[in-house]
Length: 494
Image (cartoon, rainbow, N blue to C red; front, side, top):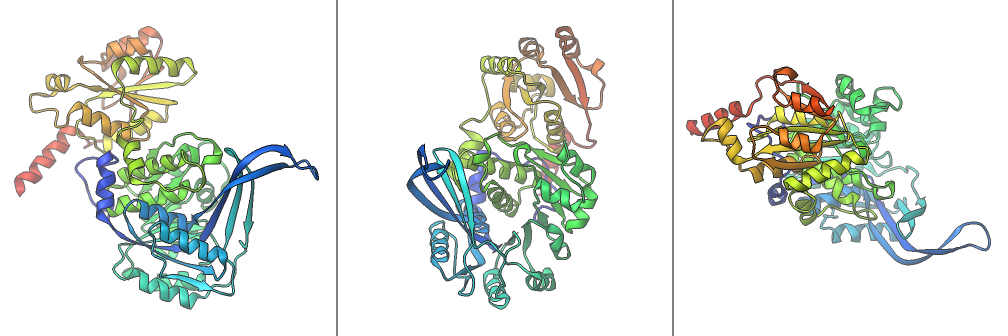
C-alpha cells in the first residue's frame, strides 16, 4: 500500500505539496451514489399570507454534483483523472448531473443510465446565508442493474491507481460487494467512505473514513463527550470491524483522528464554522486524502492535507470543491498563522482575554518528524489555542552547532503553521523563550522529552506568573539528529 513505507521525516502539507499532488495526475475511479445537489438562493422579506412561512424570492439556482459525484469533482479539482461509476435515471436530473460532472472535469462514460429509476436530488432553499428548507426527491433505494454497473466498473478500472467507494446505502448492493471481494487481490488502492463500513469488512479496504456517528455504531455505543479518545482507546475493534489497514474517523468541527496499527494516533483540528457551511466537506476530505496518499505522502501528512482542503470548502457557500489555488493559499499564504513577535504577543494576549486556554511550546523543529507531530497534537488537546515559538537560525546554530539548522526559520515556521493543530507561530532569537513567556503568560507551557519540569529553565518563569508546566509523552527513537543521520546515511549509500 502507498502508505506502508517509512519516511525519514514528516512530509506534509506545505503549499508546494498542492502542486506536487496535482502534477501526479493519478487515475481514480469513484464508485457510488451520485446525487444532484440543487441550491436556490434568494432574499426573504415577508411571510406567506396562507401560513406563517417565509417567502423566498429566488434569484439564482445552482445544480452541482453531490455525494459521490461531489467527491469525484473534488478529486478532479486537485488534478486527478477521475472516472465516475454510478447509476442515474433517464430524467432531467440525470442529464443535469452528467453535465455538471463533465464541467467539473470528471469522466462520465461509465455512468450508467437506468430508465427504470429516478435520479436522487437534494434541494436546499437559501435566504441570504441561512438554509430555510431542504427537501429530497427520489431518495428511496431502488433495484440496481448490477450487470451494467459492474461492466462499467471493469472498464473504468483499467490502469486505475485507486478505487474510491462512496456507499450511502442507495445503489451498491450485496452483489456488487461480493463481486469486488472476489477480485480484491487485483484491485488498486481501495478507499472506502460508507455509512455502514462493516458491510464492506470482507473487502479489506486500505483506508476507511467513517464519521463519528458511523464509527460509534461500529462499536455499538452512542455519543461520547470525547469521541477522539473513545476511538483511540478502541482502535483494535474499529480496525477489526472495518477490515481496514487504516481508519480515519472524521469528527466534524473537532477535526479527525487517524488510527493505524502500531503507530501513535494522529489528530487534526478543523476550522470552526457555522453548520450551514458544512455541506460536502466530508466529500472534499476523502477526495484530498486519496490524492495525497496516491502521491506517496505519509498518512499523517495526508490527513493534514485533507483537513486543509475541507477547511477551504467550509469557507464557501453551497456544495463546493477545493481548488488548487485556494488550497495553496490556505497552506502557505493567507492566514498561515506565522506572526511577527509583536503580533504574536498581542494575539496571545487577546486570546487569553477572550477566555481561551493557551498552550505554549517551543523548539527548533528543524526536520519535523513523528515525535514532533505526536507532541504537538497532545499539546493541542490540552487547551483551546496552541502557539509555537521557533528558534531563529542563529539560535539553532548556538544550540546545535554550525551545520544546523538544515531548514531556515521561514521554512520551519511554514511547515508548522500548516499543521491543523497549530494556531500561531513566531520566531525568537534568544536561547530560551523566557521573554516571550513573560510577555504572553500562557496558562500552560509544555515540552516533549525525557526529562522532568524541574530540569527546564522556563519552569521558574512560568511558575512566577502563575502558569503550569507539563512534560509530554516522549517517543523513543524519534529525534531530529537521528533523522538527519539517517538521511545522510542514505545519501552516502548512493
